[in-house]
Image (tube, rainbow, N blue to C red):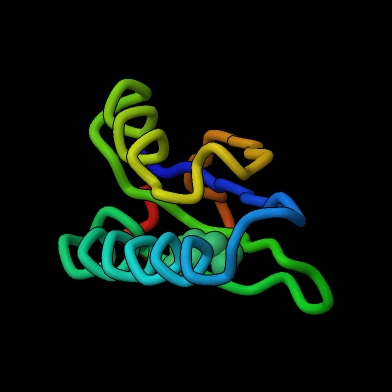
Amino acid sequence: MLFKVEMKVTIPHDMPADVIADIKAREKAYAQALQARGKWRHLWRIAGSYANVSIFDVADNAELQELISGLPLFPYMDIGVAPLCRHPSSIHEDDR
Ligand SMILES: O=C(O)CC1=CCC(=O)O1
């Protein structure tokens, strides 16, 4: 199942720089591992903001919840999720 996920990050102003750097490093490693597994198909920066739009490919809602809630930045994110299905005009046969 494909989901569009939008993540907007707001880090508290009083968080120490070394803590922020550690969270961001763990976030990057986590995101890249999920991309390598094919779970996180697309990851795009939304230009001009500390936010991304992503496409996840997961078995079900429960797996999406598990993966998203494991993000190190999860406590500092506003997240929006939309389920996707194949568009009848799409030429991409693997979009399902
Ligand atoms: O920078 C972001 O948009 C938050 C984020 C998600 C995966 C990652 O590496 O950073």
